[in-house]
Image (tube, rainbow, N blue to C red; front, side, top):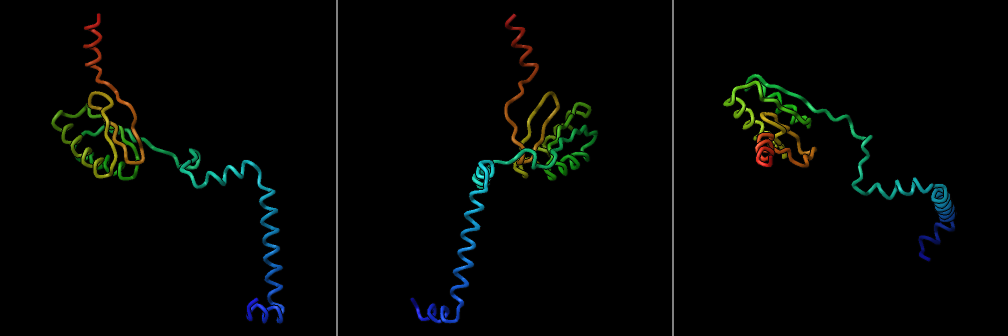
Length: 150
């Protein structure tokens, strides 16, 4: 025992600390007994990367059919806000559609997102929080293969 401990015991301070510590230990043991198996699993999964679907906010997908090049910036703003955008370019000239796709490709690249072709002149632009899996084959290529098989 150190001199400081002896002095605190003499004043009666040491005993109070020991009592408080004993109460804390007893209280913690009671809490451990009261936790159910569900709570125990919940506590063990806190450190993992499991995310509940219900805890996330609503996810929006924006449908956009631009008529001019100026509307491409509006699509880029949606991407910056972490919203996925389906872009239908079927009603614009081919040269304008190429410019819009080039602009959106640069935007998607800068945001670490992705862009995928869904159909003729229809594209899906997603931010980095959305993962696109799988591919959609070109309809014309499938039709040609189908005709060859007949």
